Image 1 (cartoon, helix red, strand yellow):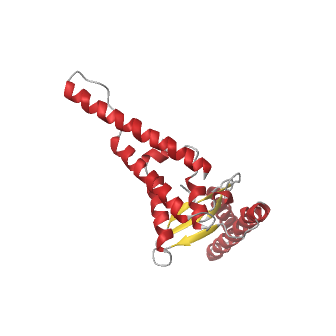
Image 2 (cartoon, one colour):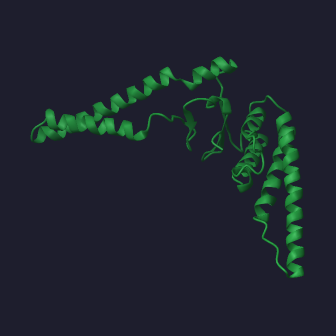
Length: 217
């Protein structure tokens, strides 16, 4: 889940609306990245500027100096390009217009806010589960908004903690069951598989109930 980023000191939680319906995403370092400006294009601009400086402006030892200057110029041009793109299509400005707030993320550590830290740990546990990644639980992808509502103080932390705890428990149990194998003739094996199937049915019923609860949250 891109709106919950684990850092060396803890977590950074984002409001999903900061990237919703935009050309931006959140990378593993918690940085807003424009998806339509590939890294290869900016790198190519830098290299092309350096090569042009070396070929057209330099000779002998001056060629090395021209290459260095060209690379620096290319880096500046790439930074300007990214700056213009961000200025024209700023997710922060759009977020302020949408919510009236400048705060779209919050850093959480276990020392400054232990209770919120526990919410992030639970959210991370759910997001990393196979059941959540495959959409078996929370198919509407409401985990991000739910976590932000608690972290930002818009919702009751206890209610969110209870929901996240149950989500994490269901996700863990579903991951532990794995795929339900086909039937065999041995009666003991069939009974075991029937028990596993019954358990999965119960867990999926709990997951459906949680989905309804999340929709009403």
